Amino acid sequence: MKVIFALLLAAAFGYLLGSLNFSIITVKLMTGKDIRTMGSRNAGLTNTYRCCGPACAGVTLLGDLLKGVVAVALARVVAGWLKAGFSPDNDTHYIGFIAGFFAIIGHVFPLYYNFKGGKGVLVGAAALLAIDFKVFLGLILIFAVMLALSKFVSLSSIIATMYAPVAVFLLSLIVDEVGFGRSLLYTILSIPMAAMVIWMHRTNIQRLMSGTETKFSFKTDKIIRRMRSGDSEE
Image 1 (cartoon, rainbow, N blue to C red):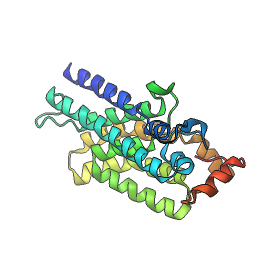
Image 2 (spheres, rainbow, N blue to C red):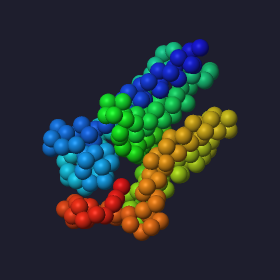
Image 3 (cartoon, rainbow, N blue to C red):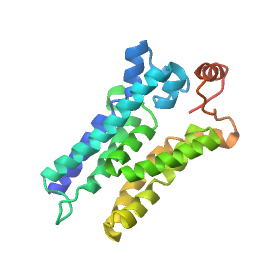
């Protein structure tokens, strides 16, 4: 019963915090505009940077990272208090994946913004940071290498996300030495998180396949001009 209650609370924490879309909040407060009507109309970091510049993007980055970290941390604290972890050490590691998944759901389908949000990359990365910083660092490295090679934010995000369950399994089994059973459980729990992020990039995948996806550039004015001329992007 304690485990079920902890799971329900983790889902609630994740969804309600995930629904706080800091791209929408930041752009509205700093420019008075709605990011969902600008550029690619995606309420995420990349579109915020391209349309509103580094200041808005920086605040968005910090806010979306914090909500993922807080959702996981809060869920683990409550689960620990309820003694809903694995015995004998009351391990609440598993509950972080539940909170992280629902934080992504909240970001993608935010309760406060008519269920229209972003793609969940940032909040998913933040959740993994709170769950296991080693997994987070490994995926950030993969993302950075792919971005340097391809210049596609979407492709880099997809590739890094695909490796998330693999990283969770190998690091849990080999580095953390929690045993095969728990490693497999953590891996299974990480798969919905990865699947949701990849699913939300399905239009990007189509554009990558057709050769119409926009490459990342620090020259935001150039990007905005291309978008206004009809090019689509993440």
